[in-house]
Length: 124
Image (tube, rainbow, N blue to C red; front, side, top):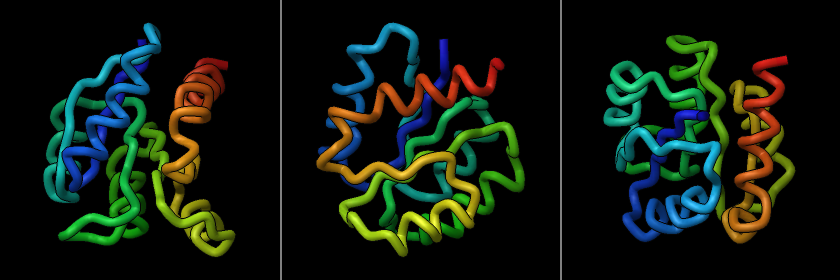
């Protein structure tokens, strides 16, 4: 079972992601955070395999947080969730070490598949 941490400053956003993941029996939500600082602490404590990271947090930029998480936990796969369907954002996410980038209006269609493919790649 793949352990997942959800990071979004919006309760509605966290609930939406949680409802999509709930349908996937291979994923387990181990925690939720609403700030970058909380995300760092929970990643240290809960050791998720995947961090689903909202692109806009109140205390730290998502690209910076991705770099920090990847530096302290190189095994963790960070997937950025964004309202912006923008090639520049996708490129920057990749440069920062994100394993994936999903536009929020596509979360229901793509999230489970993306996480499963990352988990499968990590095992191979």
